Image (cartoon, rainbow, N blue to C red):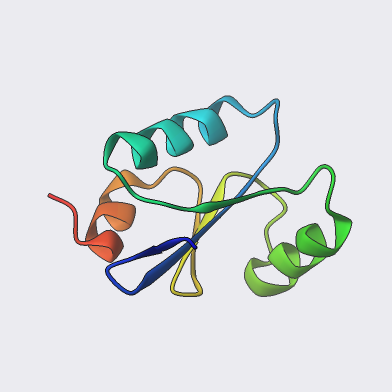
Length: 83
């Protein structure tokens, strides 16, 4: 469903987060499919996110279950094999 060359990509975001929109637009521009989870509506996902990273901030992107907190483009590119 949201695999990219065997990479599972999940974005944790909220509708009001401008960096979340930038991250999702960046992924779409690079044709990266992802599952988007709105943590303002899914409390279980929000708890899972905090338990894994210790961070409540969004966006968070998990690539093959490896979390990246924030829109860290260099790290995201490296994990996705972009550029």
